Image 1 (cartoon, rainbow, N blue to C red):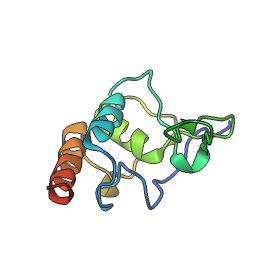
Image 2 (image 1 turned 90 degrees about the vertical axis):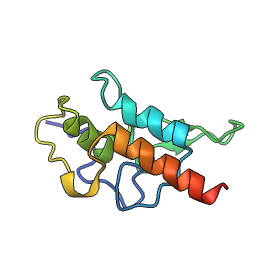
Image 3 (image 1 turned 30 degrees about the horizontal axis):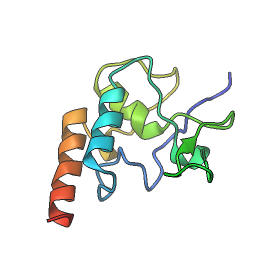
Length: 113
């Protein structure tokens, strides 16, 4: 059986609660709430490529892209299904989409006022 996910959140994973929030709060909320949708996916940034031709440097999913472990942990926190064999990183990831969104909003307010 081929594993199509990263086993543990990387040190810069946006779903980690021990990483200083660095995304715009709107983007953080978007990906946090996507974890509740069983049809959505979020690739680990370490397994994507960047489109240099894009004006905003969009991430591109490739055949080597793997689902983010932080995303899967947040999905598990919400009671959604995760791949068989995946072990959530409960202790280092946000407990729900609200906690993640709030953390990013608070950090944004501190650094942009």
